[in-house]
Amino acid sequence: MKTLLISLAASAAILSPAFAQSLEKDELTFGFIKLTDMAPLAVAYEQGYFFDEGLFVTLEAQANWKVLLDGVIDGQLDGAHMLAGQPLAATIGYGTEAHIVTPFSMDLNGNGITVSNEVWEMMRPHIPSMDDGRPVHPISASALKPVIEEFNSNGEPFNMGMVFPVSTHNYELRYWLAAGGINPGFYSPENVTGQISAEAFLSVTPPPQMPATLEAGTIHGYCVGEPWNQQAVFKGIGVPVITDYQLWKNNPEKVFGITAEFAEENPNTTKAIVRALIRAAMWLDENDNANRPEAVEILSRPEYVGADYDVIANSMTGFFEFEKGDKRDIPDFNVFFRYNATYPYYSDAVWYLTQMRRWGQIAESKSDSWYDEVARSVYRPDIYLEAARSLVDDGLAIEADFPWDSDGYKAPTPAEDVIDGIAYDGRAPNAYLSSLIIGLKEGQIVVGDQIVN
Image 1 (cartoon, one colour):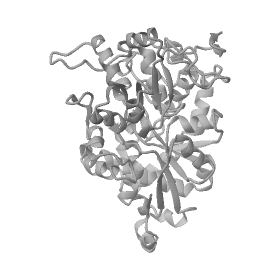
Image 2 (cartoon, rainbow, N blue to C red; image 1 turned 45 degrees about the horizontal axis):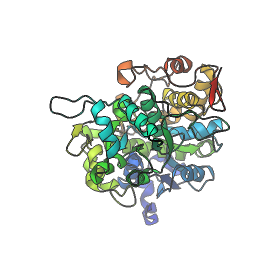
Image 3 (cartoon, rainbow, N blue to C red; image 1 turned 90 degrees about the vertical axis):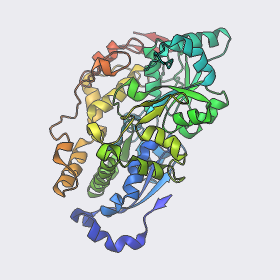
Image 4 (spheres, rainbow, N blue to C red; image 1 turned 180 degrees about the horizontal axis):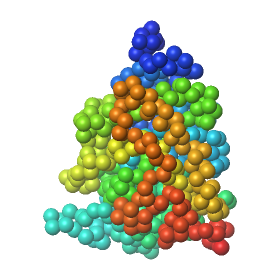
């Protein structure tokens, strides 16, 4: 736990902007999970950006994503580092129902998929090699398909871990598997395991427990954020096969979530929070990531991520190690501000909703306008741009760094930026769903263990 000293309150009026004098609430508690992409929260605290806004913040690590979400809903937490799918799922009533909004996206990329040493040895003959003998990347899940078939022939299910049913990790792992011709299973209102008709069986494992669960043989692979893929390499128990940057270049990741009620009742406080987080994101990416070593030192502390400095540095400083000694340049593995990473795009929200529909978490077809309406009710670029404008006016940010004229939708993701070669346009969600080979199409529902029209 980290708490700003209340004795500093006397100087808050000097350090904070004028509107901080009318903050509706200045003592706040934010939750996070021990992952490197919680960095904007840690940096906003450690660099004094929260304090500059007149905010006295406590950061509290949470046991898992459900506990974190429940804490925000019941008011024990004022906000939190969240899976992007959580505000959307809660708002549409999938799982715990509550109207959660996000005025700030925390990062791009940052995840990986890791398999056990045994599975890697079985996959390797199906992966082409470069001239130096190392495997060609990105690695397709088609190399995993014969491995799963061998497991099945021996009467053994192929189990993989992901962090939460509405997590990016669940959808990325499913995307990778499906792109390689492997069915990761479906959900239905009656069966929420997500394992209907599955060839690979996905289940929830909290991020910090992933390496130990893999080592114990309970799962054969997993998708998780850092540093838990690199931890498997350092421990010698597994091999990351693909990063999500290789899966979908500059894909959206975590968000900062608050209740709609909090945003409505505390507009000045919400603006102050977003200002501090934007400044933290800028600091993390400025001068070609020059501050990343300092950020790694902060994150390695036990109150934040608590992993070894070298483990966190492997991905945070522009590299990623697959097998021991096979360290490759991936400078954008963690992006916190570049490419408008902090802007809460409606098109990002729509992608998550399409994946919920693709795998049956949204049981029935929805119109394109429905996707847009839900995205607009959860993602709040209006709050974000108001905070950004005030930073520019205060000389703390650069005008050109923000997408002032955006309608909330990114340009379509080109086919070459996605592992299955399928482009994504957030303005046409149903056409996108129809283009995906494995997954529910318009009019289809899951009944029992069957997909019916």
